[in-house]
Length: 247
View 1: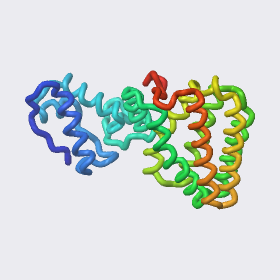
View 2: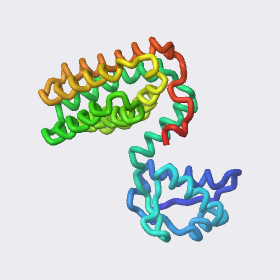
View 3: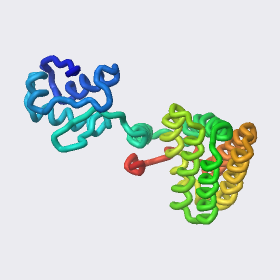
View 4: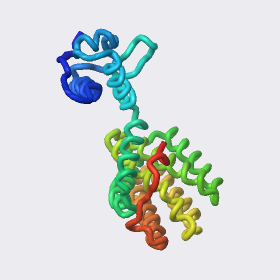
């Protein structure tokens, strides 16, 4: 067993246990797939009660660092991207980040995502992107469905670029910005058609393997969204008012 333990003698011992195990995971001392000892053994190793260990393990499970393939087996794992995205998004929502803050970063990430997609997407992946865009076109005027499909479209473009760092970095920021469309829509009814036009050109540029054009249209798309934000006088307003909206 490679897990290293030491007695815990502080308040909130369960949190200290979680932090100690997390540190060993991040250092690579505990690897994905490695089984952790049972609650009784961990309690003895850390010098705490089983209930304290149980609470620490719950925190690690919530953070996506361990999981239970069976009720009696606990293994180290890698957090799924959606867990990381939701956590980061909620943190930003709780900080009440503004449309301006989100837009400034999205102006860099979305054009880069489109450029990489034009370089790296396969023919099959581009076909799937076109099908997703067709659904967006059919949803014109339906706010909730449009927001959902818009999120899927931008996420898919980023995935086609095959850069996991960019994917993880942009996702929570983009989700907050695009879900803020509910505040923009009442003052920008023409945005649906402009969104469809921009997406059509991004898809065409990716299909034509033209990274410059893909980047240009992605940037124009985000600039257009910003114009709608300004018309609605929302530049420095909170994009998402409720962190639970990111669940």
